[in-house]
Amino acid sequence: MRASSDYRLDTAKSLLYRFWLETRPHNPLEKSKLDVRAIELVEAK
Image (tube, rainbow, N blue to C red; front, side, top):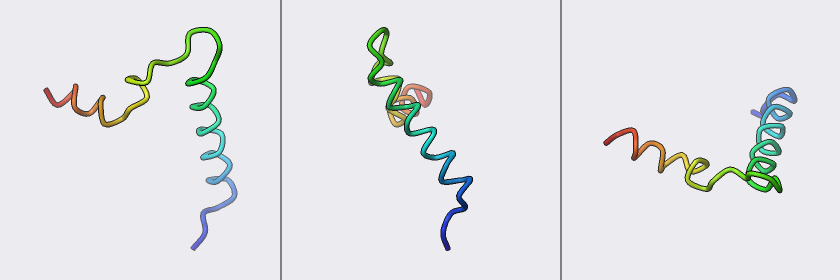
């Protein structure tokens, strides 16, 4: 079963937003803030 067009559109928006956060020229988001596994490990401690 395929995902709905609305779901695919939301997913594409999220990916583009994340890409922008990572590559924006001023104040790009740190890699550690984008790594979900790193956040889970810090919260588990």
